[in-house]
Structure formats: C-alpha cells, structure tokens
Image (cartoon, rainbow, N blue to C red):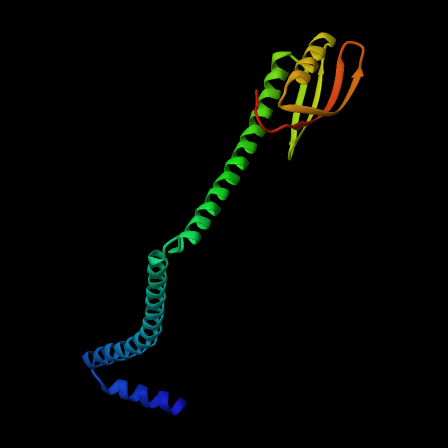
Length: 183
C-alpha cells in the first residue's frame, strides 16, 4: 500500500499544475458518476414501485366505482323482497332516530324542570334508557318539581328516595323513558 502511494506521489510530482487539476477533476467526476449510478438505480426502482402501486390503486378504485351499490334484481318477487328489506331498514333507522331524539328531549325536559323550580342542586345522569336524578331545594319547590315530574307522561319513576334536612329536601330518583307519543 505504501508503494502504491509513493508511486502516485512521484507521478504527481512530475506533472504540472494544469495536469494535476485535470486529474483531480477526472477523479472527482469518476467518483461522482459511480455514486450517482448507485443512487440512481435505487431511486429509479423506488419510483417504479410507487408508480405501480398508484396504478394498482387507481384500477381498484375504478372497479369499485363501476360496481352498482345495490345488486341488480330482475324478478318481480326478488324486487319486492328487496324493496321490503330496504323499507324495514328505513323503519328501523327511523325508530332509532326517534329514540335518540326522545332521550335528548327527555333530558331537556328534566333540565328545564330543574331550572324552573330553582333547585339549589340538580344533577342529571343518563345511562342508556334510564335517567338518574339528584336534587336539593327548599320543601315547596322540591315538592312542586316532584309533582310535575310525576305528571310527565314521557318518563316513568322507577325508584325514588327523599331525605328531609333542616331547611332543604334532598332526593334521588331513577326514571325510565317511555317511548311512543311524547306530550
């Protein structure tokens, strides 16, 4: 290795500055070209892979867009059964929508009653179809609240606990939502 370096050094000493610059530029270009070729090959393969993946995804998208969302039914009986299935699905979704809106309406009605009777503390918690209430207020307002709550036809009282205190009345209630016609 030392001999090779000595030969290169003696070779360079015999050359002029112009020739040394040209040799340096040639060596630089050779190393740059070699590095570029190695990187270019990898980059080109990556580019082709990405392009192929994009084309495959576009083909899949086109095939999905060409498929009709509802299967074609040609017979009269099959068509009627398909219509019946869709109508049943719509009815089920409407019932779910009404139930969810009903729960929200129940929640709003309970909140309105709590504010109407100026209860000191009033908390509503919903767990599925049930509402859990906690309230505290003076005797008159609390009893008026409980009386109006009992008159509501959209909620059924499943359980109630009332605790009198010196100046207030504290109550816990478990209510269940009734569905159907809400008044």
